[in-house]
Length: 252
Ligand code: MG
Image (cartoon, rainbow, N blue to C red; front, side, top):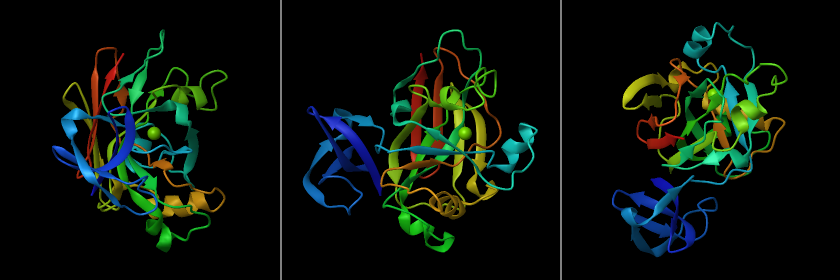
C-alpha cells in the first residue's frame, strides 16, 4: 500500500495512491487506516512530502561502499545527526542551491517512517514501529561540511529544501534488501541495497530509541551507498527505491 499526502481543493489530506487514483483516508494514517469513501484523480492533486516529521534523523557512514569511497573507517556505532522539519521538501519541488556554493551533493537514501511512539524498542520488535518506507535525498553542501566552524552539519545538511522526501510511504517492502538509486539528468549515479548496511534497519531503530523517543511520522534517513556527486542549477535529480517509487526534484 502506498500512502501519500496531497493538496487538493485547498485541503491537505492523506490517501492511498493507486496509479491514476488516490483514495482519501480519514485523518492521518498513524492511528490505523480508515477510508473516507471518496477518491481524487492523481493528476488533479499536488503530492507533498508524505508525512510531517517532528524530526528527521539521519545516519552517516552506514553503507560499506560509501565508507570505502570516502576513505572512512567502519565506525563501531551509527553516526547520527538531525535535519530540521524546515528542511523538508516534497516531490517535484525545487532544491535551492545557496549562492557561492561549489559542491551541492545528492545522497540517495531509504527513509524509514515511524508509525507509533517508540522508546527502548528491542531489535526484534523494531519493525512493529514502522509505517513504511520512502525515498530521501540527503542534500549536502560539501563546502560547509566539516569546514571551518561547520563541524556540526546543521547548515551543510539542514538548510531549507535539503530534505526532500517522497513520493509515498510504501508499507510493504523488505527492509533487509531494498535497492536505492540516484539518477542525475537521467544518468544513474548510485545503486545500492540495504543488505550492504553496516547496521540493519531494526538495529538503527533500536539504537536510536534507546535514548530518544521516536514519534509517529519521524523519518530515519538510513545513509547513502557509494557514488555521491554534485548537482548544478537546472539539473533534475531522481531518487528511486525499488517498489516504492521515484522522488524527482529540480535544482534552482
Ligand atoms: Mg546521508
